[in-house]
Image (cartoon, rainbow, N blue to C red; front, side):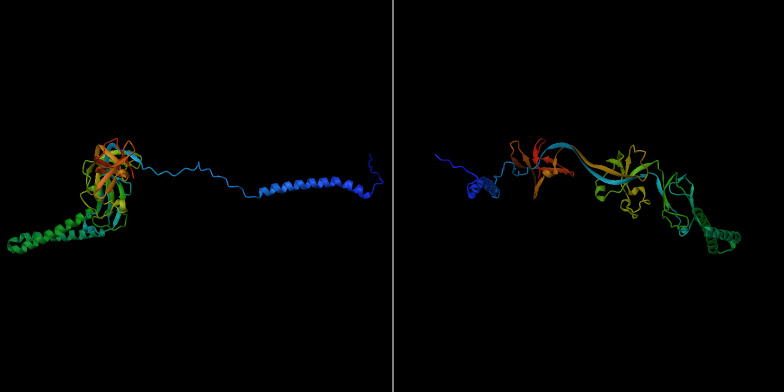
Length: 371
């Protein structure tokens, strides 16, 4: 048996070959790792397989179920609601009545808005100096006329009866003219018709007046009444004595009764539509007597009034939305206990904004289907 020993004298190529073997092993290992890495990376570049969708969480749409309502009984009321305001039962426009004073100027005004006045108190005075001067002249002429009339009376038997009658008439006319002028001058001083408060004043000193043109309004604030101007449709259904509910600006609710209906029309405008109603008389309003008004309610306070036009106890009712019509037919769908539905013709009575009274066809406790 022979052994080969590597000595320093071994050929150079052989030694180099022995030294290169570990390097080749290392290179081979690196190549294997690299090949495995490429293989793994290559797999990640492939498209993902489709994932099966889970449909169990999806809810299918349900067909909407129409609402069902129970047929009930209730007190059915039909109301008329409109705005109103508090006025005084004793109030009056103040104005001059003599046409002879038209065009005269207000010399002095003794009141203002909110002033308290007493009955007979002077509230305004016109400038009538020219009328007073004319009165003085007429009074002087009247003195001469009186002397002449005395002379005429002494000669009455000597005069023609017709001439005497004419002179006597002329004398009376002159005396009447003086009396009328004195009255006009007296009427130039305007006084309060009763004790109260000036609730409106449109005139001022220096204004020219016209007969029957309002200068303002005086009212007794302790005597109040609800005054309204409802539409013609409501007025045709309202009668004296009907109950009313009055809302005082949301601060209080009181009851009342219709006292009177309007008996006259006005051309001065509707206060609710931007016109003025200060010159209207009380007979132009629907008047309602109210009980237990709060202390905050004063003349001019605006209110909301509801009047019960009709009332029926224990009326059988259903919602309006359950009522169906086809031509002249009126019917409902009745929901049975087993879930089935059937059509039932009904006779309808009065209706409100939400309910319909059923006179025939249904009984309380049944259920009807809405639309």
